[in-house]
Amino acid sequence: MNDDLVTWAERVAREQLHELPRRLGHVEGVARRATQIAYAVDDPELLVAAAWLHDVGYGPQIAVTGFHPVDGAEFLSAHGAPHRLCALVANHSCACVEARHRGVSLRWEDEQTPLRDALWWADMSTTPTGEPTDVQSRIAEVLDRYGPEHVVSASVAESAPQLIAAAARTQTAAQLAGIRLSDG
Image 1 (spheres, rainbow, N blue to C red):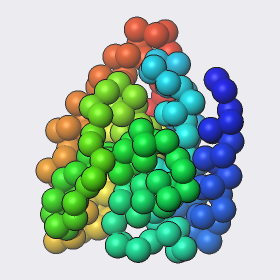
Image 2 (spheres, rainbow, N blue to C red):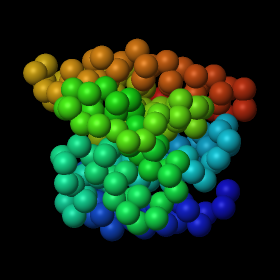
Image 3 (cartoon, one colour):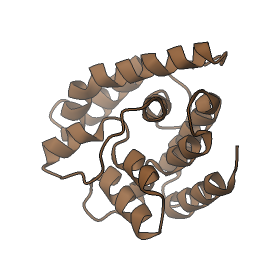
Image 4 (spheres, one colour):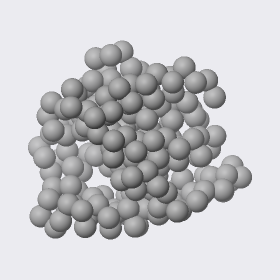
């Protein structure tokens, strides 16, 4: 794996999220999960870079709209990141559903590829503190943490079948590639 993009992504994530240690812990865990599955996708470097940057929009200097996938993608685009990386960040973990609930437009298309599925799996199989978990437990944790009336809960509940399906496809790809994944 060529680490140039990954090194840059890690540096940007650490710089932008250093004031949010819990969020940074989650991002570090997602990057570890992505590294675990990286060689089952077409562009391992891009997957790991997207894992490092998927929540960069939470950074206090970056948050503009309050919707972190869009804020992160816009920040990355303004800093010359590849379009595909911006699109992966903008669409991570079925963000299109939450965008619709919030009335936010996504200008990046969801590529619906095994790489995208692997990013979703990495995010949704990592706890808020960076530990591995299974997707169903992570969905339950999000619903519990935000409560039934929150837009995030409504979005994750609606997205659950797509998130679970992406995780299943990723786990199948890992098996075919001879990669053993842990669920925590």
